[in-house]
Length: 161
Picture 1 (cartoon, rainbow, N blue to C red):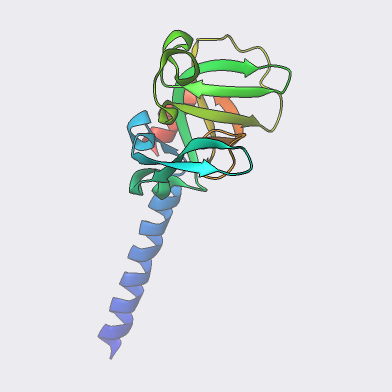
Picture 2 (cartoon, rainbow, N blue to C red):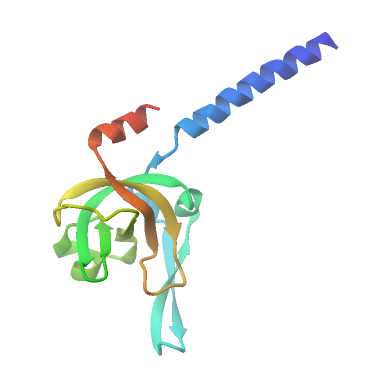
């Protein structure tokens, strides 16, 4: 029986180390290919009397739902009056709203604090909690809640963990 206690102790130490490694990887630095894992189904909305593309999220984005992530893209202040900001995989001229890319190429930025002095069409890294949206047509399919700009150095520190 003493061996069982030793094995249990070793297993506990291993499990604690494994769990701390998982926590150290938070947030995850993701790429736009993660958000591209989505299919769309056309659906008619009676109240709006219009057809909408309703996303069916694949395993990649669902894996990060509700988790803190980091993503780089082009900042686009889409509507300053309503404080509607997006992060786009492509620059303004090619983004979903303006250039015909798909809805999976933009992510709505919801800031805890106003974003400050950010330049349109400049690439930034943003950190926040990923939310998936398939039923509120007033928002993007992907939302980054409590978004904040982080530096490239901060991204490297996250990747090192």
